[in-house]
Amino acid sequence: MTEQNYREVFAEAMTQIHDEYRQAGKESEFMLWYNVNYLKDTISEITVSVASEFMWQQMVSKGNIKKIESKIYELVGQNIKLAYIIKNEPKTEHPKDELPKKTEKSAKPAVQAEPAEKKKHPQLREDYTFENFIPGENSIYAFNAAQAAAKNPGKAYNPILIYGGVGLGKTHLMQAVGNYMYAESGTSYKICYVSAESFGNEFIESIRTKTTDKFKNKYRKLDVLLLDDIHFLQGKNSTQEELFYTFNALYDRNCQLVFTCDRPITEMKGIEERLRTRFSRGLNIDLQPPDYETRKAILRKKMEMQKIRISDDVIDLIAKNVQTNVRDLESCLTKMIGYAELVGKNVTIEIAQQLLRDMFSQPLSGTISVETIQRVVADHYNISLSDIKSNKRSTKFVVPRQIAIYIARNLTEYSYPELGSEFGGRDHSTMMHSHDKIENAIKVDSSLDMTIQQLIRDIKDHKK
Image 1: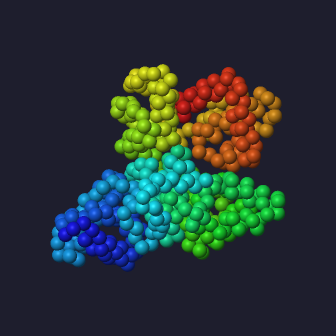
Image 2: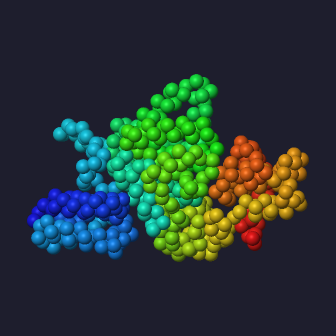
Image 3: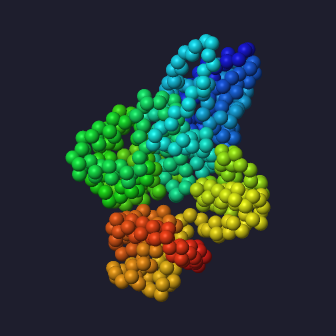
């Protein structure tokens, strides 16, 4: 048979398998583990696209590829094998519920059309795409769910809540949903990315300026809401109430909702129960730190994007020693690139070990407690742990307290309200002020910066 004679057969096979999973109440399993798209065929083989090598191997090990091949045999009476190509965002076929393709304008026959400039959404980072995200065992579930939501907004999974520690890719995946939809549909979809903090500040400002109708009109008429860091909403009852009604308005219209958070929704304090149930209604997906193989793949992808070359030995060294998150991996790679460019030398294993000694001694995310930070800072300034938490206003106590708050905010995943509880019940605005004051001070006071860096090293080395 000639190319594409099996296109309809493949589509029918997938439809039948989908129906079987739906009837068994396992539709989400189908969406995750049958994520392949038809590309082409020959007389004995169908080639499909798949998001990653890991994804293909998982589908093979689960027997899903064999199931597709068996279903095709039932339909045509021939053994047709599946081959695959790694391709995160196939453009050759769009199932019936996918976003429509862009309509191309006809060009003059005698003129070579210029390549269309890639459309960029004003609120989204251009590099936060599915193509630039490297899924591993820690993130494949979230990756595939986000892709499914982007291709079938409001239908596949809704809402999606992605949670996990800092630097693991929550915001990347969230914005990838928006970037995919914007690339496919442009302004025909109203897409908004906003942090929960900005959402709250904007709502408060609308109350002050008596423009709440304008605020509601803006958010309740969206097609896609991407709301980042919802843990910021803890204890903010008025903002939570407004988000509750916004959620209902969008959900009832089958608009796509994606949220991120630094912890499971069940562990968030100060969230109204009615809003908590809304967040829990769809998929809640945990992002864990990437494993060794995924860390190496991430580093290689970053090098490819930046068109630079670091030796495999150095990449392997970083991947083995930096186990925290993607952000820390990027930080190490940036350091290597900076050294090579500024010094004009290739980065050797010895140089890398010297440059990254602080990063390599850093413990896994989440192992540094606020109390450890408080104790180390208090010991350095010869005051007690209770002094750090007290309301004493003498400079002797205020400066160490502000330094401890600054370090805690940067070394832990605690929000400002949570840190406030750890520092004697202070409110979040006081915590923000303390953090910002130290952050500004170290920009002009190099000795203070050196002191804080030494404290951070002591905290990381501290024996609990």
